[in-house]
Image 1 (cartoon, one colour):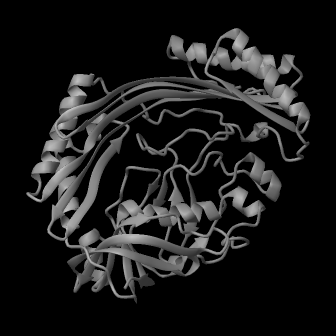
Image 2 (tube, helix red, strand yellow):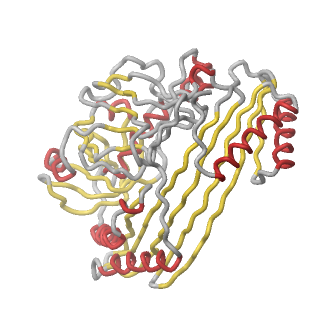
Image 3 (spheres, rainbow, N blue to C red):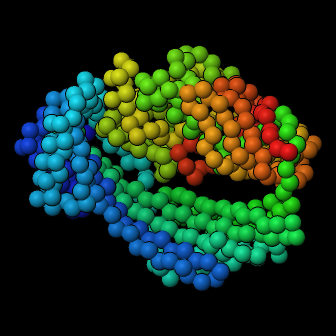
Length: 448
């Protein structure tokens, strides 16, 4: 097929050969179709605590997963050994499993017309040539800065520096083969602040594919210390109803719940609060939410999905209206719809900002709650009911008044989405859901 990429190095050629060997072995043992993926990589992770190194860990990973179809029966097996005999053994095992499985009329490979024809270079690999001693020094400096950020910082949960470089390859018996290299790096720190009223813990981290674009380690430490100290003196609120701002790092959870509700598995099981809502207004009319899988160097970027389907930019929400679902090959067949290139999930979900930074959102809100941390997983995907433990800050007249803790925020996502007043420009780029802080009107805050 014309999609086949140029092999840049011997390692990639070996992975491609292993994939082809797995598909051939599956055919030899009676599979009518097969697909395989390989992931390999290596990394370094170091942690320090209280000025001393705690752990130095070198990682080297390699795994092959093979899925076979015998008619409409499916079987899977995997191995960390890519040798010829091991590959044939997992092919035999997968085919044996398939023969004992129940037939599923929706099982099978993605139809060839959907397969990616080109593999764009998305600039996803930037190795970090850092040795353990350098990583330890970086982590120690980060922790020192956190401890020095405020005299009330009395203890440390440590600092972590990690780097990983890997590659992903996928092939199937419809003639598709493709892959890409990738990297991810991070610096993380958490500390404990203490005063006469008690202790508080908080932290900060930076993450990027390119180590040159990480926040400076000292800045990470300083922010970790400042966030922990700011939480001292936290108190509970009386139960009330008030507007709430979800700070950008926690706001992503609101939209992860949305993605879960429009994903194929939830829809065909009829276990979604957004069932049969295509073409209807489910968010405030100013909201646009779109997927951008080809952003250069972004953490959620991918040229094709786990089925081999080309990813593409598309709107999920436009003017508040639901434009499409999130479907892989299997769920699309179950629903009688077209696949959307979302095998494995969404890729760089962007919530468009319609406001300025967090400070501007605080002024817009006036009086209400700023949430900086959430506890638990209190989201009912069937009804949309939302209830999470929370901590953060009470805001008066657009300015932070005092820290709060041991409260619960509750509502229903159907109402919360429509009551989004503003989304901030302070986008958190450290994940796959790219959103700024979000101001929601009228949530129940349960406290004393």
